Length: 322
Image (tube, rainbow, N blue to C red):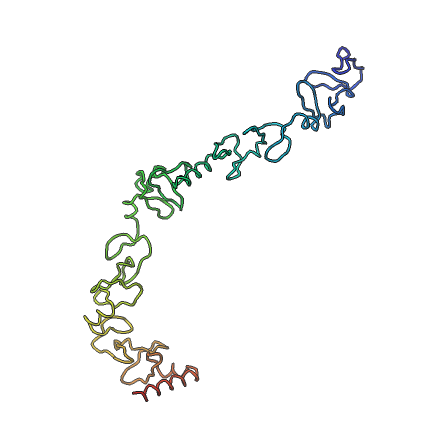
């Protein structure tokens, strides 16, 4: 070491002196300082420019570019765009804010990630953007889990044939139209086609709501009451015209013995108390009328006194009018 000279003062080193070695060049400790501020390097950290060594503070002030994103000095890797400098973490897509990592396209003059640029172009052209490949869909799109896709990205879950835009989704899988129709879907009893949406359950069958209609006039019931005869459903008007008054309880033709009371008709076995559902023997059991329905005396006595007074008043008023 005695044969080496300090790179600054060009003097030699004593035998027991501590020597600084940087890249094969030697310095006295007192000589190993920043060329700008002449202060020792904190923790031995220095930055070199054109063969001269600087502390971090002076290097940043003299040579380090300033990040256009955060306004801090950039030490290390730099991204450049439009004569501006950026930290890699600050160089982000101007639409979604994700780091670009050097891979971007220009959209309206701004650095943009490829998915955002494609989405923006799709919106501008009123087209869908494929959720898998992020490319614009120029033809008919396929919808899966609420997202648009190119149909060629999928095969039928059952037959494995390529799908078209007419593919159907069922239980989080995609099927071609043929396989979809063969799945365990309800089939409309009228048109014999699968029921994809809301269904009406009646007469031990399933129906499209618009197909569950009167067997005579073919008008859809649309939630209205229907009457059955020999497995066929009828509206009230045509049921009465064809078969007479239906039983108020079962909505079917009355049995041989029928009871007409309170403007309604019942099968004998369906003339029951409105309160306890016990069959009322029309000829021998005492009953009263509540809301135009038969009620046995026991259930009638359980009604509040005030309510019974009002019922009696209405009954007496109606009888006087008659």
